[in-house]
Picture 1 (spheres, rainbow, N blue to C red):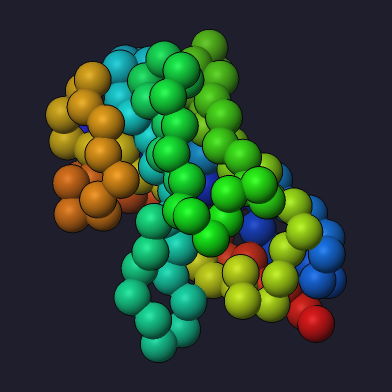
Picture 2 (spheres, rainbow, N blue to C red):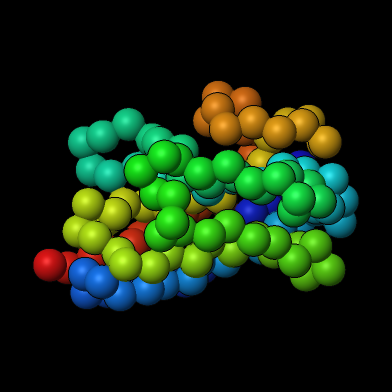
Length: 125
């Protein structure tokens, strides 16, 4: 069972930046793809970014490319999401997640089995 805890959310003005962190309890963290997803009020959960177990492969939602960067530190069991040039429409609960299988890359939320509790990001205009 992989337990995930996010931090770093908060209130920021449009144009500002935030760094989200997600720490995993699993000692085999380095074997898992990690993903970030977000859900705004009244909307479905959407994919934000994913990074492979080695960090060599990343994937982003097309609308977020160039503003968001996903990275990981396997020595610290942590995945990060750097968010720049934030917009009010980025307001959402951001959650990190890991798929059921190790060494498996996916951007589909349905293939992610382990989820953190989420952290709220609010961008004011």
